[in-house]
Image (cartoon, rainbow, N blue to C red; front, side, top):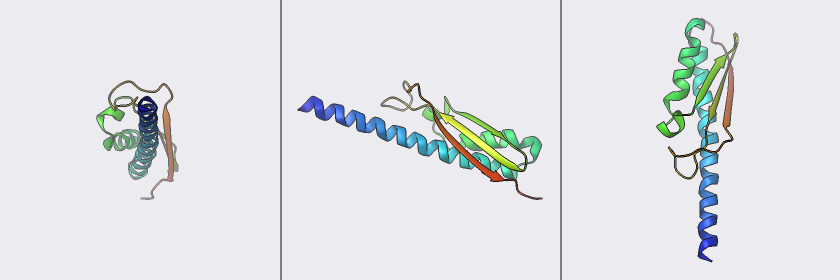
Length: 107
C-alpha cells in the first residue's frame, strides 16, 4: 500500500507543478503585454521581455522565452518549461505557453 501512496503523492505534486507553471506563464504574459503597451514602439520589445521575466524565479526563468509584437494591438507570448518534481532540476519536454494581448496606450 505504501508504494501506491507514494506514487500517488508524486503524481499529485507533478500536477501541482504543471498547474503552477501555467499560472506563471499567464501572469508573465499579462505583465509583459502591460509593459509593452506603455513603452515607446522602439523600446517595446526590451520592456516587454524584462517585465515578462521580472516575477519568475530562477527555476522557471532559466528556460523562459518571452516574445512581444504588434502595433496598435500588442501581444506577448511566454513559454516556460515544467520542472520534474523539483524546480531547478530536469524539465518536462512539453513547454507551457501563456499568451496575452492589449490595445496600445495613446499618448
